[in-house]
Image (tube, rainbow, N blue to C red):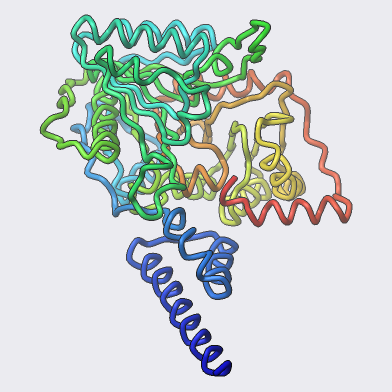
Amino acid sequence: MGDLVVQHWVSVHGLVTVLALGIYFTASHSLRQRRHPSAALAWILSLALIPYLALPIYILVGNRKVGRGQAVAHAALPAASSRPGSASVSRFQRLAGTLNLPTVSSYDFFELHVDGGHARVALMAIIDSANSTLDICTFVLCNDAIGKDVMARLVQSAQRGVRVRLMLDGVGKFLGGLPDLRGLAAAGVEVATFVSVFQSPLPGRTNLRNHRKMVVADGRRLWMGGRNLGAEYFEGDHRARSRKSAWVDLSFELRGAIASQAQDQFNSDWVFATQAHRRDLPLPHPVVPTDSAAPVQLLPSGPDQAEDTVYTLLVSSCFAAQTRILAVSPYFVPDATLQMALCLAARRGVAVDLLLPRVSNHRLADLARHAALRELAGAGARIWLVEAMIHAKAVVIDEDIALAGSANLDERSLFLNYELMVAFYEPVDVKAIADWIVGQRQSAHAYNARAPGMVRALGEGVVRWLAFQL
């Protein structure tokens, strides 16, 4: 009798294991779930050895693609894009086209915020300027001075007849001290949660977070970058109870056709989050570029894109770089290919400069980065550590292209999160972003690469194994 029970259990276990592995390989193939080798190996071993535990977890968080790309409205190619450009810009734009990204758009106004105070004034001005529509997407909305000011202005906008939509990430909304979303909704602000952790019926999407940040007024003005809507991302909060020091961050304002594209991207995210019909959403306003309009390109990345768009463009740009790669990021946990592209660029004489905080707000990410930093330093790259918490995200390639927005240089950001970057091609604006990064570098210290001891090397290896989730 005992032998029959054991045989029955073995048979059931075998069937469950086959089912679990079948689900994994089917989902990986049908949704093109390219994974880091360590992540793929971990899933396969877990599903084979402990399928009863691993399969439910995989169904909840295992998938990293939810579709084969979204149809984002493409603005007409602006007159500015017809100007003769560098070969690197042409290659970048062709590659972006093959990734089904929005076509090159334009702007007739660009302002890079020099600091948090400047960014705050610009943010509130855009919110207050809205006449018909105001769309806000953020990862975190804090229940602090900045967050409360934003929420009060959203209510005022709604009360004067503006259609106000606020979209928060399902995890991010818990990280800012639980803002009064019910009060906003009662005042007429439409509030949506992007994939709620506790209520989402969508298999495999719980781990896919919306990290995009943008504020769009009337489809004509766009405020975006790396800042969440909280005090520490602007000027800090020095009240006794809070004591939030200001982080160094990067944001900017654009006006023109690019804002219309951003509103259409917001609409796509809103449809996904709320299951609303597009016919019920405000249509992006057509914007006719002026003669002085400059070319710019919206670069969404994430599970809604068939390809790993920003990652692919970064890797290609690093391989093609001729003179310099200038980057700033709060976290640096690259995959092997991006790391190789940066190291090879440094070895062939490209000036590779990477700006990071000496200590970030994610200590595991800090521990995981050292092996990559040592290898980069050995290849000839220069790593600069800033004493303040720097939260900016930007990459400048040669004198031709600057990428800025919400994406960090880590695997979670490049492979799992919904992110939004902008590619600048106008030389004067590329230079402005590069100068901002160089300005932050003035107070930084050079990274001192040291060989780790046995315990530290072991700790770094364990943390790197989890790098995909950092």
